[in-house]
Amino acid sequence: MKKDLGVQPYLFPMPTYMIGTYNEDETVDVMMMAWGGICDTKMVALNLEADHKTVANLRARGAFTLAIPGSDTIRQSDYLGIASANKVADKFARTGLHAVKSEKVDAPVIEEYSLTLECRVVEFQDQPYGLRVLGEIVGTLVDEKALDENGKLDAAALNAFVFDQAQYGYYAIGEKLGKAWNAGAEYTRK
Amino acid sequence: MKKDLGVQPYLFPMPTYMIGTYNEDETVDVMMMAWGGICDTKMVALNLEADHKTVANLRARGAFTLAIPGSDTIRQSDYLGIASANKVADKFARTGLHAVKSEKVDAPVIEEYSLTLECRVVEFQDQPYGLRVLGEIVGTLVDEKALDENGKLDAAALNAFVFDQAQYGYYAIGEKLGKAWNAGAEYTRK
Image (cartoon, rainbow over all chains, first blue to last red; front, side, top):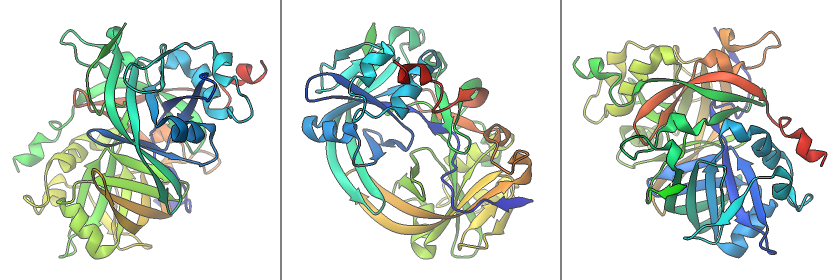
């Protein structure tokens, strides 16, 4: 029996990605985003309210990083999602996280995040619902501890977590369930 | 120490969402998608290659459903992601899953999926990388077993899983890590 909850943005899981930009005074701004992500092999999309400080920074610098927070940074990362840099100019400094400048784009790489995409802004799009920022991936930085013996990204080592928009909770990533693009081989043979 | 893996679409976790449409003969088509999701409170975005059968169906019907597969359907859902309806016209029938017609849009609701957004197509967008379909959410169907005692969606009950694009694996959702928008309260007080 299915119940209709009305019009709700209730897809689950939602990712939690961290957008890193520079403020005009070279300090770092980071915000958590749940609405967006990979949209093509070399592209990411950020759906953002236009009044975010992050958006002003994106317009000024034309670059950003997009990183995956691990559960060891859940308190800091959550705070970076709720605090507005328009009101709390030192929000990143308060968290005690550390940043270095990307070698490829004019944006900060947060040292505590194990996977970071370095991106340049391709365009700002006025969508029927608001602003969408399209970015091109120009580099992918991964902590060595998150690489397997073949030098490939080991997703489990990221200790990522996901967001539940219905009840505003975070969940850990659990056990590996098997190989994608293979699990349903039995139906191919039918 | 961070290593540069080059240009990679390596955000993790990626969601696995199932797009449901009707073929011209009223049979059901379902495909798994990882690149897209919620882009606003009432909107979803699908980033798709234009030659998918799903895209032809979206153009013909102007409607779709977007559902979250549970791990009990991982074999069927994986197959629906790898098989092309352009080559295997009966791919949905092969899985043994069941569908009923949505009461709100001209698209199928898959009975085995616990959460389904009913959507109407708002527009087809030619993006620098390819096709993006913008949809408006008009209904949210949830199995009663996935509602808590207050009638709210209990995300844990969906038994959702996520996709790892780097090594093509699926991972379960794990334990709840706490309340979002609250975890970092200590920094607010600084």
